[in-house]
Length: 144
Image 1: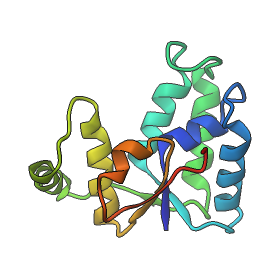
Image 2: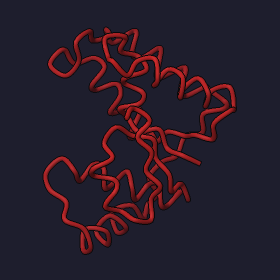
Image 3: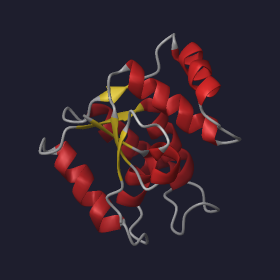
Image 4: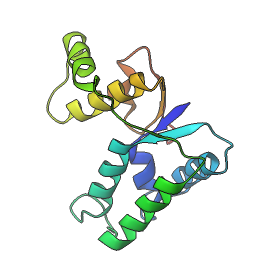
């Protein structure tokens, strides 16, 4: 199973993005069951944060539009949701001992810990540079 990183969700709902069509295709494949994918609650929170922020995206959605999308993802049967477990902080600290992580990268490290806890070791992301340092992950950048 592959986690769809937040950037895939954002591109899939930002028709100004050059990656819009590819991201829509990936998301569509997951939703119809042709691709074994999932999202974390963290991805959904990040999606909402960015898709509604005019400083981060060319054509932001208003909060009601973004909330409808979140609700549709929450109820999508072919889109499993994973979440951090009570061991997440301890697992993240263990990873911090072995990997150089700075500033906002901590949130991606928390996501990796969530993936490990849920036995998801593949990710579709545009941010392959950060994720590739974790050799136990299969990192796919579908936007290359």
